Length: 511
Image 1 (tube, rainbow, N blue to C red):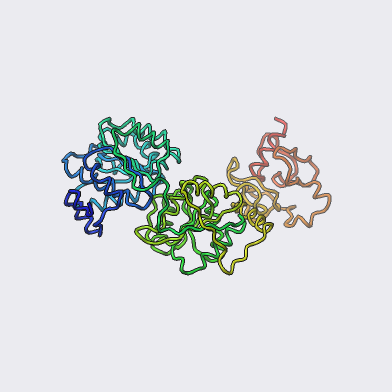
Image 2 (tube, rainbow, N blue to C red):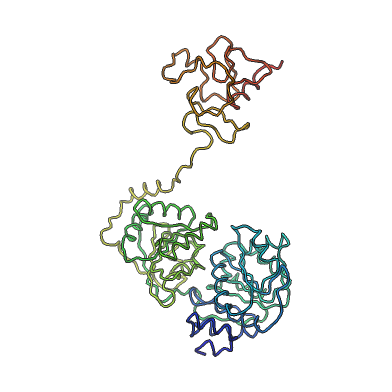
C-alpha cells in the first residue's frame, strides 16, 4: 500500500492528511495502520523521526469515527501516556491536526501548570486525553478523573518511561483501566524490561519492527572529537561561530551542566537557552518557541529533549557530554536529519567518556568517525583544561540572604522579622531594627576605624554568639542597650535587633 487512501481511513481523516500534504505512509505506518484499525493490540518499534505518532493517531481517529459513544463525565475514551511534557504537547497537536474535521474533543495534562484548569477541562469528559503519568495520578487522586471508560491505551516511548522511573505509576494506572481495551505500545528501542511489560499488558499483540533496534538515522553524519573537559566550552563556542550552523541542539548529561553551557555561550556573545527538568513549564515553552521561530539558534538540553522535540530545520546536534545510557545517543542524534533532510552530529569525548563511546559503538554496531579540531582552534593544555573545568564546576553564588551581606544589611527570615545585626557599623542607615522612640543618639560612631583600643575591646565582637553575656554597667554603652548603660531587668531592650534581645533575655537574671 503506497497511499493513505489505500487503508480505508475515514474520509475526514483523509481530508486532513491531504490538507497537511501527507500522501505516502512511512514504513512503520504501513505496517501498523491495518492491525490497529482492526482493534488488535500492537507493539511497534521504529527509530525516532519515522512517524510513530501518526501510526497510532490515525487508526484511533478512524475507530472513534465508527462509534457514536460519548465520553463519560470526568473520563476519556482514549488515553495516551507520554514521558515528557514536550512530547505530550506534540502528540496532542497531532491529534488536533489529523482530527480537525471530526467532532472529537481532546486535551493534554502534565505537571508544572495549574491543576485547576485541567480539572475544569476534564469535567464534561474528553474523547482523547494525552497525559504524563504523574499528573494523571494526581487528577485521579483528586477524583477529577476516572479511567473506567478507556477504550484504547497508548504508551509512547515506553522504554524512556521506565528509564525515568515511571514503572510503579504505570502499574497503578493499568490496574484502573478496564480489562477489555485495545493497547498500543510504541518505542524506538525495546529492551528486555519493556518486552516483559508488553507481554504482561498486551493481549496477542502484533509486533512491528521496521528497523533494527538502536539503529541510527541513515542521513546523520556522525563525528567524535577527543577533548579535555575544560576545553569543551571553548570548542563549542568556536564551532558555533560558523554562520552556516543555523539551528543546533546541544545535549548535556546534567541540568546544572546545561545552565553552565548557556552561561559560557553568553560570555562569547552567542544566544542560547536551556531546557531541563528544573525549568518551569512557561520557561520551557518559551525556550522551545524561541528555538522554533529562529530567535534562538542554540537550545541546550538534557535527555528530556532527546525524544519528543520535533523541530524542523535542526542542522546540528552536539553531544557536549556523551550519555551514559547508549540508547540515548540514538535518540539525541535523531533530532536532526528529519523528514529526509541531512544533519551532522558532533560528540565531545573526554578521557572518562571513552567507555560510554565504546558502549555506543557496540550498541549501534558501527564506529563513530574521529574528527580533528576545526581550523583556527587551539585547545588549552591538560593543566589549563583542568583549571578551567574546576572553575566551571563552581556554581555562581546566589545573593546572600542570611549573613555574609554588606555591613548593616537586614537578615531575612530571623524570628521576629526584624533581623539581627551582622556586625555592621553601628547606626548605619537602612537598618531595620526596632524604633528607638526618642532615645538619645549620642555615642554612636559612624566609622569603627576611629574607635580607640579601649572602645574596641568593650564593643561586642561581630562573631560573639547570640547568647553572649552583656557588658557590665560602667563600660561604654553597647548598641541595642538603654542609653544609661543599665540593663532593664525583665523588660526587652528598646534599641537592638531581635537576635540581640534574645541573647540578653537569656542571660539576664529573672526578676
